[in-house]
Image 1 (cartoon, rainbow, N blue to C red):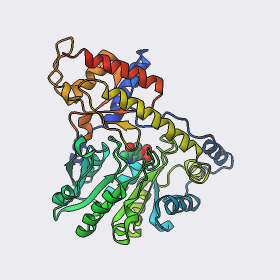
Image 2 (cartoon, rainbow, N blue to C red; image 1 turned 120 degrees about the vertical axis):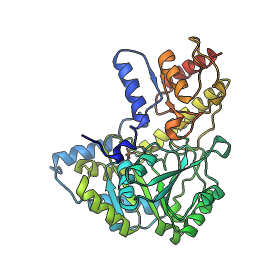
Image 3 (cartoon, helix red, strand yellow; image 1 turned 45 degrees about the vertical axis):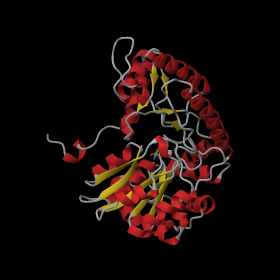
Length: 398
Ligand SMILES: *Cc1c(COP(=O)(O)O)cnc(C)c1O
């Protein structure tokens, strides 16, 4: 049977692949240090779990409204008002099976053949593939560590053509941890408004920020940009709820209603129990989040310090998320003890995994050759052990 061209255009998620490989080695009893995971290593807070158990006990186990129960939409409306200075009504919110599904609904409702979607690189791996799945064309804007992995306004302006449909902003970013200030976003917003393109703002790491950084939602920068923006967020990263599957989008009613119609024919509502748990997550005590972020902050300092101490490796200190994205291109051209030449990030990543039992994700999956991604959503002990191994591995290259 012939597969569609659509499915042949895309590739499996490289981050899920490396995680699977590391887990398989671990299952064989091999002591692998994994820096691949894109999820917090903390347990879901107790009050959230209790709310889910209560939902089951109370028989809240049936279909709900496609776009989410009112109680959940209402706490999200409150959250958007309080944290982001944004006012939305229930018809302007859609709850989906993770932020990934929120983004996919947007792509389904708004992208088609002939559309161009501007994606800054390094990017989250699913953006280009979701654009491709909907017959549109990803237009990649390269950024480097020299600009702190941020798009310059003139760069965005230059990339816009009559075919441009949307710009995807991800701040704080996966994989770089870069976060845009209010002023930087104001400049981008002005260009978006001038050209009347759609802005998709993925703010899933909003609360995972350091050094007193203040996250600002681009949609809050004025009525005009708000009319062009869909804000995406979710519970996975902030509340350590990756397995529960909850994300949401907030934006103009016309788009949200189209996306809700699509979701109603594809998945219907998200898990009813998850919805009750998320009401508690957003309206209950937030101290678990504060604790988690402060621990991430300690790990960030350690991992950045240790990476920069390795000759040939340079690493920026990220403002948010739980990833570091070191530049390892100075190691290219060197040989492993077995005589194999390291020619790219993928080679370096396999050398680390095969010879030194450390799993990292190679940069090209994020559109950034010359870099690797390490998640520090793992214990301090693992960070120290893994960095000992990377240091050793780099030292052995000649
Ligand atoms: C993890 C992540 C998401 C969404 O994850 P879900 O578990 O589907 O909510 C979206 N965007 C970025 C950048 C992410 O890292």
